[in-house]
Image (cartoon, rainbow, N blue to C red; front, side):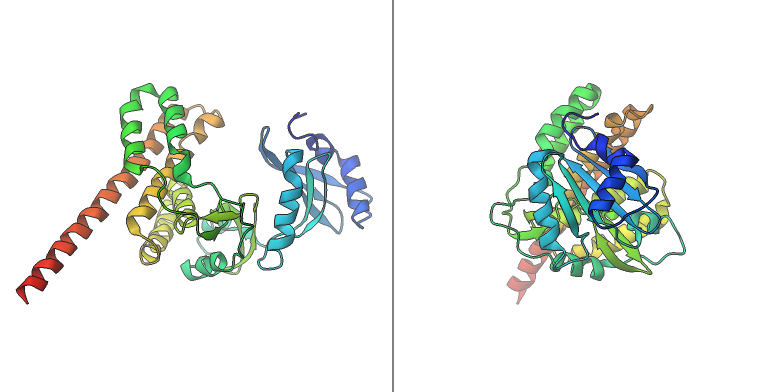
Amino acid sequence: DDPLLPGLAAAVDPVRARALLADLGADEDRVTTRLRAYRPGRRAVVEVGGGSASIFLKLVRPAEVEALHRNHRFLAEHLPVPKSLGFSRQLGLLAMQALPGSTMRQVLDDPTAPVPGAPALNALLAALPEPPPDAVACSPIQQVRRLGQLLAALLPEHADRIGQIVSGIGTEAVPATVPCHGDFYEAQLLVSHGSIVGMLDVDTFGWGRPGDDLATMLGHLDVRRAGGHHAQRIGEYAGTLLRTWDRVVDPADLRRRVAAVVLGLATGPFRVQRAEWPTATAHRIEMAQRWVDSVRRVDEKRLINTSASSHAHRAR
């Protein structure tokens, strides 16, 4: 049992899950349940399968479930988001339709499968409707100081480097003016034959900054590439996205945000208690440093170009 997710025990119990399917109009003789994702005290996802039907149950804290239900109902009118089939405020449980396709993470792991290009990702994000005025997605930069303190406590021998990264990223100075998914990376997209057919986990939908979703995607891809998962294919794909998005948003700001995302992902190996977490965490800290260094290179290139333009203007 998870006291902060009171619906979890019911969701993984096939008998109670069968009753839930029946309430939703799918009367199955035999039901199976599978825990697909779990963050203790925060959220869980359970797949409930029957002979002819399958749904997903999302477990959140009870105070959050009604807003999540509204997000799914609202976004499903505009985007391929799972429709809400109903919710229980008492259990903090949301029932959602199952969508077709494979996650883009799985597609990237298959060298023969086509991957949606940058135009498809751009079109998906452009289709996000305006969120409610009070829904603001958290910027990755806003988390940096807290994450830096945590990482410095975990790996004090890297405290100086972490401090330099945090300083290099800086504070959030860009207003939240565009609709934002809020956690936009390859495992959140469902793909079929190279087309995006689903977008998952819309809990974080709200107003964000132009580079937030793009940086989240790039940061996750960079960490996955560094983990050795089809590194060349993922690296080439991420490189194409970066070159495209450099023309869409401020390249220096984008890199600051990617550095912040990678720094956030540096806590992952410790959180899941990987045996080699100190080494894996230190490697991700080094990756975040490289993104900060790339910000300086972009700024230097701008300075050189500005100076050259000024000299050319005076020469005329």
